[in-house]
Amino acid sequence: MRISALGGTSLQTSSLGLGSAGLFSLPSRRARVDLVRQALDEGILHFDTAPMYGLGAAESELAAALGRDRERVTIATKFGIEPRWWVRTLSRVQAPARAIVARSQGLKAGLQAQATGPGVGVAGSLLYRSTGYTGSAAKVSITSSLRRLGIDYIDLVLLHDPSPGSDIDDLCAAMDELKERGDVRAWGVAGEVAPVKAVIDRFDCAVPVAQVGWNIFQQHALPDVGSAGLITFGAIGGALPVLTKRLREDRTMAEQWATALGTKRICPEFLARLLLADATDRNKNGITLFSTTRSDHLTHAARHAADPELAAVLPTFRELL
Image (cartoon, rainbow, N blue to C red; front, top):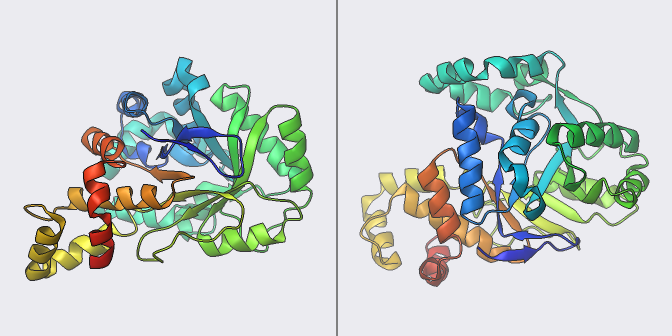
């Protein structure tokens, strides 16, 4: 696994990072812990979480899974969105609830679409609330995250999906204070490209990190976030459904792609590996986040993101796209 020095910071960690939001579609805590431990064994050293993930249980669970390996990993969490006070109690019944959702694809799709934040759908407003992005809000949230994570410092703290008009009063000074007292090593802004760039432009200090959604269909070059270190997410989920649908509908094109890419057939797993390899290749000085609940997918991601054979066909893949 390639080690990246994240631009704009002093952080050095694996070029691949594991996101924890999707882990909670696994109903078993044991399965989630095992997946995190497997990621460590595969050389993945960066883990992304947030107070809202897993109905408020993700930070505590990630801490338990990492355990004694905390010092060799980097942990990123966020602030600005939290579960409502009563939602954390639901974490106790997540196993049966997730099992029910897993058996209903329609229910699963509906919850995923409507519960991604306080401003998204009825489910989102019922489950989550915005705590704001001011310096005082950051301090309160980070103190709580440190307690839930059971650690002395957080490697990276990110504003979680701020809008361009969000109040960021005194945040630069607050982050300087948190860094000076050792609570935080680096900070940044996370969300989709346009609002993240708009928020970064409003700061009167340099923003060290931008974490943005990106896939190969949005633009072939990575987004320009100035001097900020770059973390991307969504490279697979944003493009794979489009590609698989197109190639399933056009068998001639699928056969042409298979010949050009030197494989017997084009399958979703092969395309996912190419998409992840492409994303990590483009962001050599940053981190590429991905999320999975399958052990075999995790293995393929960790072992093929920098696979020389895949790297050799990336120019052809990009031309075909």
